[in-house]
Length: 447
Image (cartoon, rainbow, N blue to C red; front, top):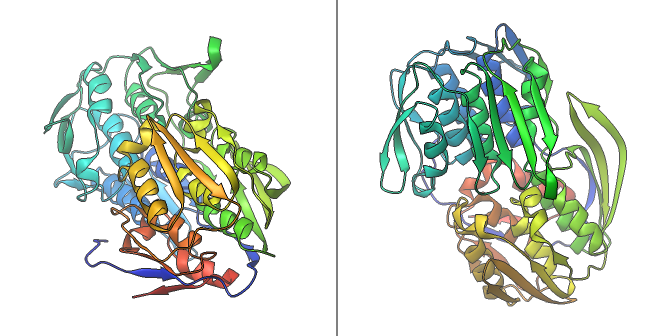
């Protein structure tokens, strides 16, 4: 699972319209949580549609190291035989979380509630990412941490012998921080309370409820939410069907919007309202996106999307929407570069601490391809001309899978090819991306 060598990839422009019907891989956020909660449940959890990207496989390996049994079957389903809350075993070796900030932060929460010692590390990108945002609230619950300067990995954790219930207000909109505190709260008696001033993706709350925990969510003034978790529940194993990842679906969707004459169908996409900010924004820009066969699968809203090429117009994206589309700004910026007029994306401070400084990486890459782009404070402005930028650049991805895929999409419509310095990290979230895009008619070469 190591990323040994760089993989240069080039988009040379689609020969014609994109067409076809596809299902992108399973939702990454839900896949991580399904494996983790399955390990904390009593009995067996069966997971269909699990994302078999490197990030999720790291989570599965970590839960095995903590004593759960995680088995892949020939048909691609997974079963997890759990240990129960508070019953995970001390790992014999360091837990390597690869490139996954979600896995590292959520696992820190789980470990904080177990009276065991563990050490987590990750790849070069993950070792640069801030973990203090979970260390601080988890320390207040009784766990002890030892980390590099700035709270960075490698991180040693001694979980609390008698965890305290949480009462925590999340200072920055972060589903990972919220989830880490809730997962630690599972081991504590009484009620843990987490307040978020800006609602973030609620997969953890929905799935905890599905496994049998008591989770109350109360609306607060000015749009915030109060989450109350009753500690020490008995979680029970259950079947989970993972929807297709809306963040992954965003790449072929935007490709279909900007390549003239295209129309594609994306099957079974998760449409959780706290994840659907990109699709709302594209609709405001004039995108032709039809949503059909909306249905409920294991507490998550799922639908099929038909996306057809459309002239797009620049819009002002409010900061209040940033949390619901935080992973989609790179591909939205590509759509904006092909639109008429200026798109202003507000409140993107969180992008500076993703797999890379995504804000700088987007701006630098677009400028290299001939787009007019500027950063004002935490806002990204893309000044579209109604035609694609010229391309002709090699974009530095900074080991960031979403930057890599975004610029391969842009290269489908530029007059000159767009290359990326390294596409090897795409498999962390979207295994088979290039093949799937080629199946729709995209032109992507490797090497």
